[in-house]
Structure formats: C-alpha cells, structure tokens
Length: 284
Picture 1 (cartoon, rainbow, N blue to C red):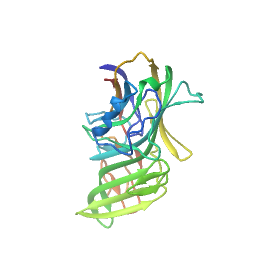
Picture 2: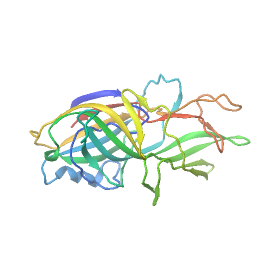
Picture 3: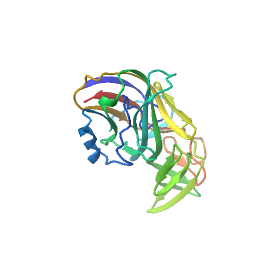
Picture 4: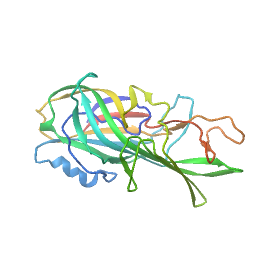
C-alpha cells in the first residue's frame, strides 16, 4: 500500500476521493461494502480506477472547544467527483457522475463503500491540483435530551439535503429540506422543514465545504499525476475518522448539561460540525 496523504477534514462526512477520469455510472445506491458495484473493476475498457470510503472510530483528540458524540448511524450521498489542473481550470475532468442519483456512503466504524470508478484509459494524463466532491444529503442518529416540561432522553434521527434534486424516500427534495425525528419510548416525534442551515464550521485542515447554485461540494487541494502506463486496477481508499465527530456548542440554559446534546421541540443547541475529523488516502 502506498500512503499518499493525511490531513484534517471539515464539516463533511465524506470528502476526499481524488484521481481523474470520465463518468462511470454505478447506480443510485450500493451496498455498504460496495457489493455488485465491484464489477466496475472488470471494465472491458481495461484497467479501472475505483474510489472506496472506509470508516474508523479510533480515538481522536478534539481541540475545538465543542462537545461531541459519535453518531450511531451516519451516511452521506455522493453524486459526482471532478478534478482540476488548477483553481482556474475551465475544463475539469469528471471522474464519476451519478446524475440525479447518488451512492450513499456509510460512516460507522467498519463501513466500506465503493462510491465511483472510471476506466484508467479514459483519464487524461497530467497533473491535478484540486478536487470537488458533490454531496447530496446527510443522515445521522445521535442521542439527545429533549426539554419539554421535563427532561426526556431519546434519539434524533436526522436527514438533511445538501444539494437540489435529491430523492429521499421516493420524494425529490430541494437543498435545505430536513426531517428530524425525536424518538423516545418507542414513539417518534417528527419535525420537517425546508431551511436547514449548513454546518457553521465548514473548513479545517485545507478542506472547505461550499454551496453554489443549489449544489454543495467539498473542495480540497490534491497532488495527483495520472499516466496511462498503469496496467492494473487501482483503488483509491479514503479512510475517514468519525470519533465524536458530531460537534455542537453547549448552551447555558436551565436544565441543560455540558456534554449533552440538549434540544426543545423547536430549538437545538448549535451544531457546528457533523463530519469527519481526519482522513488518510492510500492506493491498493
């Protein structure tokens, strides 16, 4: 294995696949371990370049001053990957593009998801310095204490769209749509709306979350040179650390506790980040 890079990541739950190529459709979803989508590696066009996301929850030391917990469920939709020769490149290369669909990458320890691939023969040779990864939505489940006359422990099951035109449970949703369901005693209490904000701490370690024209993407510097002398299938493996990566700012209100994600039926302690703490990229 050739270790390529290590850095801090931002408000993303994914965000670090890099290489180059033309589009190669896998579908709108894939099993947690890649499943049948692995057939893309046997492309008749020859050797292929694939992109795989793996998750670790190894202990991570946070220095941001916020409270945090490790989500028991966490996923994010990946729609496309583009790479640029430099920041002003007018013709970026599309590595993969799932159109109106997405591949939902898992972010619980042990998850392993193939999110896209491209025949190496179709990848323009040269050096690439910037990557943009379009994301569609995030899902996560975290513990919370609801304050509504009494302090009620439970869970929040959350889904939020980050880009336009995302099909969630059979309905196409716009950017900013959300459904937060508080679960306690086996009873769900859902809340739905259309103006959810993006995380307020979207940049760390050279990683930036941006939104433009209804599309949200992660932008990061890369240092990759593609050559057509590659004769075997390659896999770019992105391992993300998710230890206590759901980060919020504790509020000093009656009944609220430090280190507890406190909520009411209409308000939430400010969520500052719900993405990866760090990432390591390697070739296999």
